[in-house]
Image (cartoon, rainbow, N blue to C red; front, side, top):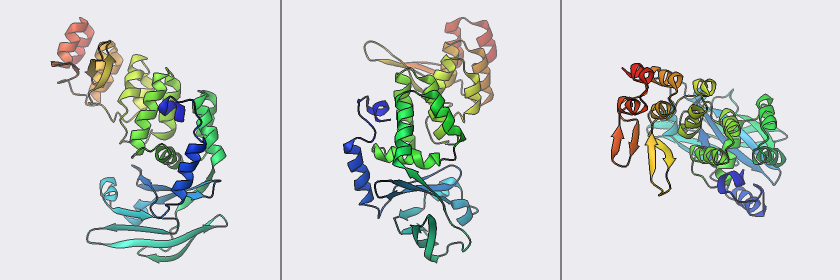
Length: 301
């Protein structure tokens, strides 16, 4: 996937990246983590040079009434032998553990549910290389076959995000989709979204949805969370490097996509500011007037 992100003709697991992976193993006292919208804490525990244990903790079991926002505000310290979760004015939750003989063994705990153990799965580097190769070669059939697997895709996304130095999985994901679409691989970008981002409400999905509107792919649009519904994103970059901006509704109006316009309006798309070029800002109705489409103007009334 490195070539998708940096346009360099190198392998994701070239020597320099193996060094990065090995250096991550040497600083396991602070492991990167990711909290999903489904309240799952995900982190990866390196296993020599063979792969990682993908570990997932159901935070809803530990904090039954907490929201995602509340859980993300807590302090998490994860290592290869300890897990500690703290928050102001609340008792800390912690365990000492080890993964041995394919078992997650808790040796000591504090405020931890006695009957709860995190889920974990070993992922070999060869499997990650294979996935990278599927994206690099635009192998849509191979990527679609991954849907039948029970791989922990949240952990895999975290692995690639950290390997490439991105601070969040959302930042990595937006960048990856951008690079894939730059190669005019819309189907691959959709599959990336399907595998990794369908349930992520934090990611900026403007670019993939803009492409879906251009291709009149309403089936895909209806399956997304519309995270960027009223986001003003870049539409067209001109020869002088200036650019136009639009919302998803603005894009649908520009494409004269009546079905998309109607759907986005039903989902709460704003009509006030949908297009901008320099200091020129247009409302949905003003942009529709430019299209001279009576059907679109009627939809907006």
